[in-house]
Image 1 (cartoon, rainbow, N blue to C red):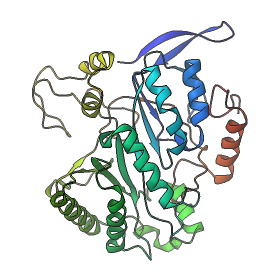
Image 2 (image 1 turned 90 degrees about the vertical axis):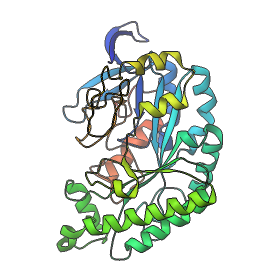
Image 3 (image 1 turned 90 degrees about the horizontal axis):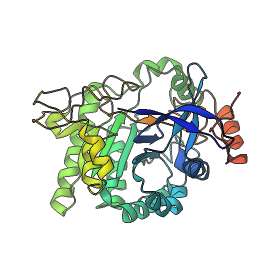
Length: 355
């Protein structure tokens, strides 16, 4: 589904490049918060270089065919001045906006103050519309001080400020066991003692308590005139009894609804459609529906429902310093890499080539 093209560089050299229609910016770092000028420079240049985190090999990404950019951010305010330019380029976008209230606990030490992030959410929603700004309560964390009841109270309080500004709330539970880096961070910051790590992940019973509380919150807002969907991100647990679905963060159905006049995008998404009426894990399916099994993003976890996109971000570049982060080897390395990019916003890559 993704084309490879011959890309001509500024110095006249030619190289092979991937030319994705859908770009993720980014699951691996916060491009809107820290690298918006760099990213816009790369869009204007027509390409960027991505370095594979496993083998350190660089590859070229062309934006020639790009129709949709999915932004992932805890602070998208720096992207706001560039939205008009994206429109002029003919590039659609929507935002996965992670908005938690962990201020008292210090779990996200370098994100802007909560009130500022709420104001940014409002500005973004007013500019793009509520369907194109997805609220992510991600990840949900229980600690010595955060009980399920307090966690739900925090989300309820946030919802008072976000009423009508989004149409979906996506959440996930903290994944501790899979990431040694997360475990070390939690112990270092005294969130858990080392002997408590076995209980750091939210248990099944508590997950159902939280799901039921979110269901009640949605029903309460429905009575007040605000409807939004609830969905989990890359979670195995079945919460359908609470009206909670499995999410697709890279979602062709959302793209069709949000960008119906984009013929090139519509033609591209047609390739995702089923010829028959088969059923799959996430989609009850009807003839002509999307074939999520065939076009699943193979670079993501098995339970992830996203269709293919190209993520252009890189690990070890985000200085938010979130205690639960799995994308950084160390905060110091992330800060050094970030500062290097900020000093050279014309560079081809987030991390200087050759490192």
